[in-house]
Length: 458
Image 1 (tube, rainbow, N blue to C red):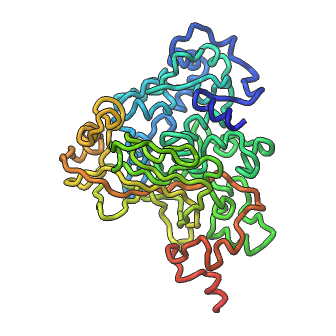
Image 2: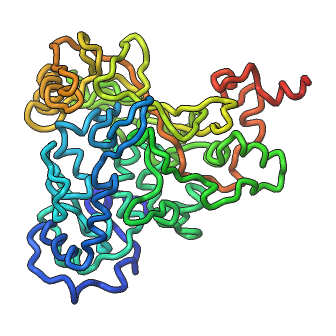
């Protein structure tokens, strides 16, 4: 079933039998419907207040006001930097296939036009809805059928974007990929298709279409978090010593021993090797290790997380900030420290790579990779840098244009691991951390040595 699921997710949603809406909107929705906006116009006739509420959410705005690095900024997916395809700006048609709207082609997109809201991507129950460039619905989609059969979202609705972030299945998050659509208990105890069978919104609850829980990479200053204690008590163990651990150790640290359990995830992306006339090779998972238009990659499966203190906020590199090419720049990194009374040790996927920077201005470049003058067509970094940097709002605000001098520097992004929760019998045992070959780097976490050893000495 999982193979069939992957195939259908790449072409459209596959939903379990009986998942179609119990109350189809056939008596409310009439055809013909020639565009997504025409469908939305009919939705608004009864759901105007829902549409207005949705337009205030980050699924629509792709940015929100938050405090980052001590500054109040409006930051989100549309203007944050990453070390995958780097920037939404100047690459909108490709990136906005996953925007819950229609026609987001460039920075001139009208975020006040309610008819551009895409209701169907989240509420389709037919499994036939697909989005194309700039978020438009594919011409082959029967919009009347889809509109007449809307209902509550299921995992496939969310997964069609969130499982495929970064350019492919499992590329970005590490703990979200196509295997999570219908997992077994060993993969994820909460989403086990034969057990609890949670839908995403069972945990990611929200009001007025505002979904709780946001990625640290685009919302480093957000405080709208989801934690295990949102559903579970903090003292859930019969063992008192384990319960004391929860004061400083997040539940995920012990209960998610590894991520990318089924599908591999990308761990390294080197843009400096793009453009070479060499064979595009594949690894043991059938994923490419090299692509001329993207460079070289390293993939991982059943990956052990890295660990860091996290207080609920993060540090982030913002476009236009100065960088040092001799150092690894953290584009996002958890904030927190041992002993601050707030932070806990959390598991993370750390995605590393090399990307383009302006060697005169010492800033990372929002490269244009898609469309006219994009690197994927020209294989010319100067054209890509000029087209991306000279039109980026943050660069324009600082009066920066591409200098013509370039280089590649190493970066890293930290992604908090929350999914792929293992059964309690598979949780980490004491020796996983408190032994000579333990997985925690105690010095990096601010300890002189394993704290258990220190207690024994006393």
